Length: 296
Image (cartoon, rainbow, N blue to C red; front, side):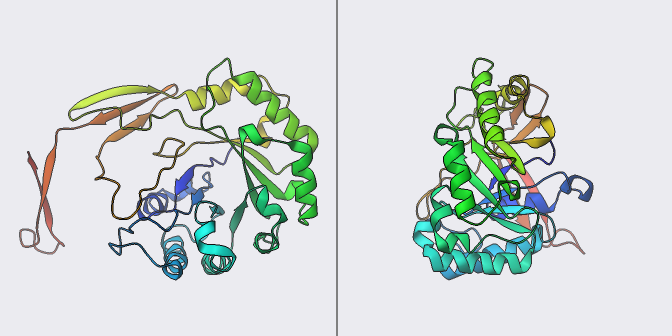
């Protein structure tokens, strides 16, 4: 079932986290980077970037953090604002940095010549995203072939966000796998889901367990499908719940640092007491500075 296919915001923190993975783990991870809509202030610039800046920033961050390994870039949330030309520029710059980067297309994109032009050459040429409620295997195969791509050259991302995850829903997931596999031989069928709460489930100096229903449901679905496990793959949304909500303008709130430890069936979430970080650039010779942590 490897590699692991997390869906991640294409933001500086997510890129940095991928880049800090040990090399022995990077080979088992294939991220789907979701481009934010151009309505959000960028941490590096302190303002909303221009459409041209978005394309160049994406390439720069890929170059620093994920320049050599396969990844997918999903522009669907930004495509309306960027337009066909902007999306084309985004991919031209990004693929110049990482030649193994692949586009993610929606069902509608398959009939759009501008999106078809993003499809790469190689054994795997594109990813295709669909919501679990919109799966139509026959129509999908027809659209893929009209776009000039063979099913075995496509990775399917089936998003189960909002589904009633649990053992009772596992047979329905298994049926979707069977229908897709019966219609064509895809490169991979990636299950993507999250049961993590929309809001941080702990306050200051608290801890809690969050059931990993996305993972346990996937394992249950494997028992309900005839598709071989090596033709299926698992993905969640990294540190996010499945609903990637991007703020408009300068809003969005301050991050609340916390730790997560993932177990077989639950995630342990721990948040410490509130602290204030004081930066003193002179108190440590030979270093950039020293951060003092003070309880507040």
